[in-house]
Image 1 (tube, rainbow, N blue to C red):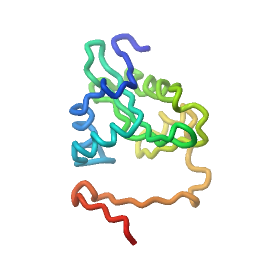
Image 2: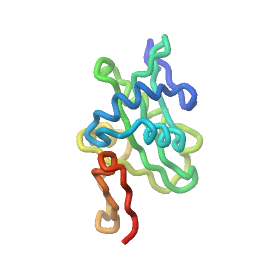
Image 3: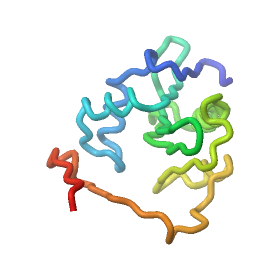
Image 4: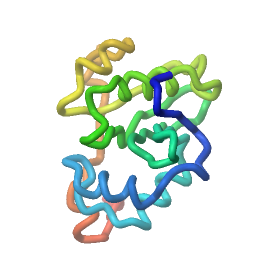
Length: 149
């Protein structure tokens, strides 16, 4: 642990306002509606770092079946709390969680934190040609999801 901070994976501890404020201004989920963020949180295994007074300063969520696969998403540490080792603490807590043991694959996408994740065993895809995606970058703007061919 880091003095002055505590962690939790109890969804009741997560502060939707703090999370949404950061995520909705991020490069990966700009303008995400609060109800969409709330739904994502409610359907994920969530992790937070909090000050001793209970203010949320970091967040991450795992989308997982808790048996085979997990996807790490929406990781952040608030600007004023960076440089204190909180991202490493968060990753240690996530990777040590009982529901994430024995998984065949964990995945994530990042534009700027490769060195953090590499410290925990993540690496570039071995077979990127076998992975595909359906990417709808404007879904939060248009509000329309069309999955039909």
